[in-house]
Image (cartoon, rainbow, N blue to C red):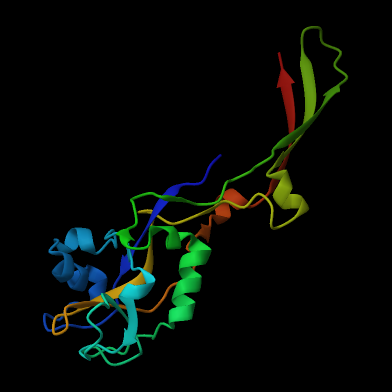
Length: 211
């Protein structure tokens, strides 16, 4: 079956603010996008992919070129937090490896990406057994679930972006002094996780008797 659709979105850096709440509750993204924290805490704000000319390196509160719309953090302090810097080359590589580079200059559409396909092969071996009773049938059964994973641990693995099927690409902040978005803490290009229960192989033996 095909992979679960998911969306690339914004995240927010953990940071205790004046209200005494952390960004994991959606406080920061809620303020930037004007959303209730019930929604912003789920990181569903879709990612904006800047064009090459719209990106520059810098620190929060430091003036940047007028054409620059998105500042990649150089690691300068933001409030009580020091975010991880983003190198422009690393950012461009991330966009290329994820396929996000084709959305430069726009907001990435919802559910525009899919987790990997999932392939699973099950096998049953059954052998009829001698039975002296007319109309009755006895069978020995060997069931192998996810045969591919039994043969190779890289096969038959179910990988998907976890619910609610969004993958934060960067942490977002907003520099009100310079009217710029600030991206920091670039995430992994592979946002999927392996579902252990669906990915392991199982073997069962049984005796079936029909009468």
